Image 1 (cartoon, helix red, strand yellow):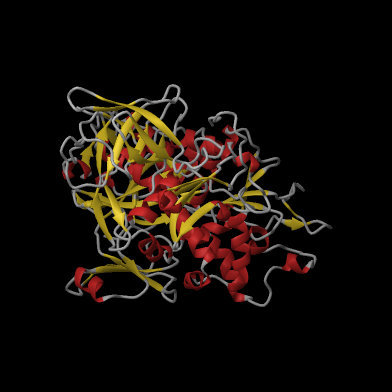
Image 2 (cartoon, helix red, strand yellow):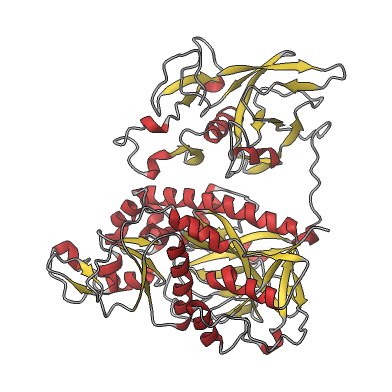
Length: 622
């Protein structure tokens, strides 16, 4: 951060200045944040009128809050400030619509205006993040800007802006701003205007670049040759489940793989990063609003424990999976699987080996970086004991657990797999131990949290034996996973973003967002007219999903064990039908950021546990 004239810095959360519209800028000196005031992650989230502005007190938060206060619109959330320069619309909060946003490169002939967004690229002082400020006054030789997270000192007395930046007006009317930050670059400014004169025109990609292409690998006498290394435990487990060296259960798809364009791959990466942040905002919002939390169908005696899990900033998500429909008709998210998601090994290891074995050229494995991202995510966790992987006795969970074990061990942690919980016991201190007497302190699980919750629902009056300080003889799954002395990945709070009840909340918080399908708690006339999908708020593998078209014809449905759960209703946006198969794109995160992609395919419109995970390749640019 920059020191201004040796003025004394102020501590985190205290005002450093006030801009037009009485918008306050605050110190973002995180080293001075008072842990009594900012004791959980919720306390670092900024809301105005129940609209999320950003993380306190970042530059993006101030820019969104300034625009909302003074203009009535905000821009959609971004992972990094420099990405704002690529946005081409803002959201009119009052009228619930979109307004045009145009970008003007530094040196453009259209001068910035009061309320323009000034954007720095990543690099130099703003390494990885970039920076954004609000332009509050424009002159031929300078502009005034207001900002946060640039300095911790108060703005000069009587000044409603943080600093001035030198400008120069060229002989051709070109307007240039000097960049005062070491090694950094000013990209330009953004103006809310329909007039594209002199604007940076970023041609929209032809929608067909988002179409998924079905391809056939050249057999070259390799179709029946082995390609999985059976000396590797995870690959041997995969080989056993698939009954051979194969990626598809369908012989007709033995040589099939799918390709996407580099533009589509970039769009998936951008969408994944942005949607993760949106789901986190919605999670925080739900936990702050009891009337919404009720709609998630969770045992009431768990609510406070879920909130504590969310508040505990060490309780971070390691990895997760988004499910998308992507085609020339658009890119839409179906749901977020951040509790016991599957397909990691298929995408992070098997599809790459398959593509290499069949010598598929012309692109790169879309999951090639997933394993390294998982290793980095585990390295970021401060873990001081053995990580126990808890799995059910299931072939898919076996190779899934073995693959994750290899990532955990590559990160430098000790790891041990437990199949079932029958081997677990309790010592004299009521601490849960494995059969070797190792205390259970860290868990990564393949069990769904809902399995543990079902135990609680069956005995609602007996929350957790451990909380009554009773000696446990044989701990149940809920005794293990809900133990305050055990850290579980993925954490308990993932019950919120994984629950489909969050989808209507997202639509409320981010109306008309391009990645979201209109989703409601009640079936509306508009949904009936367009066609809709009914989904239980909790379910797995497509169970109890029903797809109904605008003529009220049932196009597809799956039976399952979740028919008694509450439903949500989502606009019908079918998966693309590519060469005889419906194709769903899955993206994976590590530490909340994009980590890789894969596809699941089926002859049915509803993807379930038996749907194939086939190889996905990202085409090289031509």
